[in-house]
Image (cartoon, rainbow, N blue to C red; front, side, top):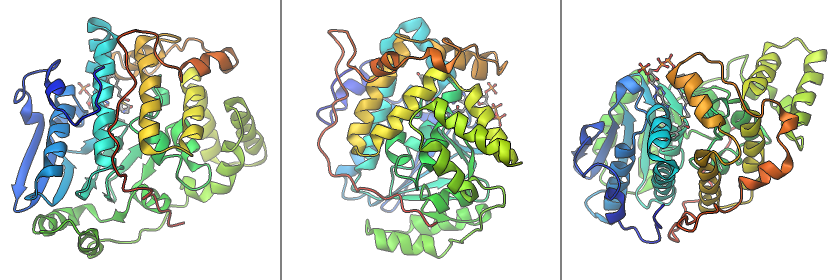
Length: 395
Ligand SMILES: CC(C)(COP(=O)(O)OP(=O)(O)OC[C@H]1O[C@@H](n2cnc3c(N)ncnc32)[C@H](O)[C@@H]1OP(=O)(O)O)[C@@H](O)C(=O)NCCC(=O)NCCSC(=O)/C=C/c1ccc(O)cc1
């Protein structure tokens, strides 16, 4: 993985396709001083390819220095905003080319997440439809996150043998109480109203009004966030939480997901289930039982560490973790998860080790260590000013 100490784009095109090839996967519309970036792989639910990540990075870096660009709008074509990194192609490339392909893919993606988190130009993401994994990474670090009545958000990586990355240990660990642990471990799906209430989203707009909002935003000629916020406010609504919303169970979530270990979390949930008939508790226990035991343990530690770290620290730590995952150093659950969920689609992954008690503390510890390879380097992120904690719960 090349160092990223400078915002140097030369290395970004060294290992992938030449600039311009696959460029239809990301469309860019210019209107005055706004740029609309459109993810354009609707058949794959806009899953992020290596080419898309490089092109997004090129755009973001160019816009930071371009006085003619004042506002960025990000959206997806079709029924999804973005269902994550392209794990189907990615896992095959890693198997065929080697783990360094994966390290390069994730290094570029996390660098993009960092540039977004520290961007001096405001970004408005129009999050309608599916927003998962890498899709959250390219939007939730930005200043404005607009959700709709059609938004379905999740960080489902523990079901895939991975862990919530793209800076999720930063943005999930800042949610109210232990809601972040709940969302990260069980891959729970949140709707637009829930995202707004917990602070992942900044605005809720009905999906049929998004085209009008977009037209208004395209006329913006300033980077002033108060002005941009004022425009979105004109379209925004304050939806109520559904009766079965997980946010109405925050007391239970805090009690159970604050436990020190996964085993204790599950046992606390089982205790609740024995005294309360609530489908939500049963579903939550089932999701945890179905996920990769290794993923669950490294995820819990990642979210806990993220609570006190900067976004850059979180991404650097996640990069170490993901390099161990793609090397298959301690477990090959990621490859098995991609096979079961995205390639063969039998939905029946065989995790190894299969049981929580077989994932020992020493194995978890190793995911947080440097990679034992003389050519490997930590993710090198340039010092930049973050626009800070912008997760504001409305509970
Ligand atoms: C619930 C979904 C989002 C929608 O379900 P659906 O409405 O029934 O639609 P389909 O599942 O039929 O999806 C339509 C198409 O999009 C494809 N797709 C849908 N998400 C994806 C997707 N993340 N990737 C690659 N094709 C996809 C999906 O395989 C399918 O392709 P095809 O069968 O050829 O029509 C479902 O597709 C789904 O669970 N997707 C996986 C979402 C997910 O776990 N995302 C976050 C984790 S992804 C991640 O962490 C990345 C890892 C990665 C690791 C290494 C790398 O090198 C690169 C990346």
